Length: 505
Image (cartoon, rainbow, N blue to C red; front, top):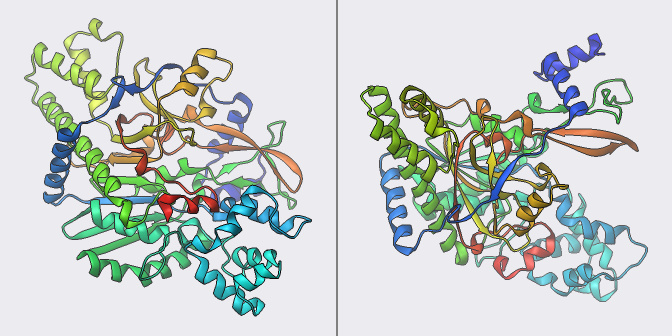
């Protein structure tokens, strides 16, 4: 099925023939739905620390940082902002000239509130000879939108989301990239250094690097730290082959195979390249102005404190197991830790003899660990926290997307729709083992949790394959703990009008 030219093409991407054949087989077989035990809730997989406990966790985190550990803030930032402006692109292409939909009216009624207003006004002056107010008074609304979206103006329709002006300040507006630099200084710095890593798309990396170089020194002076800022791109070897509806390889007009990005799950490779003891992960658009950062900073420190507290216990137990002199009572203590604090349950644990129990406990303790902030469910999109069956028959905490759940199973759908919490991509990860070695993170991916979607190219229907999601199946075989964090820490920007919310003003 694969020609010599195909093999040359895939070799250039760093992909093997076996990988392509596996992907084509996955189009045929699909992926199994996950077996669920329950939606996680407070008291059943979700911790809700009180004020005293939060203070203790913050102290634990600050003590950990004082040990000189390396901490990195990892920000997936490759997404283009085009989806943010879907409604405004539609207006530009509509057969009417004035704002008609509620969305369009809201945009223009509040246009001066956007942090990018002054820059947009300058672009209009330069390209149209008139500012926004005059253009609107003349009924030339589309000129304003064109200057916002198109290359001759701000080019916001093509720029990455991290490069848009989100928030106003007395000394000038800030992009999400800048807000993440500030966050890095406030909760993820140690040794007077803040390490921030952005994953960006190839076409935007030079622009990102230039903007970071312009801005970082000002924040370094303000917070008295040194920034170490790095970038990476999604690797070509994580692209997936596209298929026709009959599951044969989809080909471009020149006969070559069509490859597509493998989704955010591809970033497990980028994460694996990071040298750090602890890594914070947070989406590029989930930022707030300084006046609202206190909750974010406190709870990032809380979840990090939970992480390093659990890690310290796990490491101590692993060293005891290495020592070999562990009696049955101590094994039961360790098993209780695995079940009650790491929420990994094994219905058959009572039948294990001591040697088998040691092996089981070691297998569950000696793996990467993450603590995920979860917020109360208010209908925003996001993965839900669940107690889920693993391939070895154990039950543990996972973040699931709706695509992973069998919608024909009424009990599962009830769990999903009535779940009390969801995860807004708010993670802190421990990625070294108890001997200080890096875990090989791709080994902990559940490869059976990919996803197939329907797309098209040049009017032709195709099937696209997404790798197990970064915070879903890619971290399936990690230890996972959920901590309730306030809704104030979750402020995504999915449409341009979201910037009009009070939290972004």
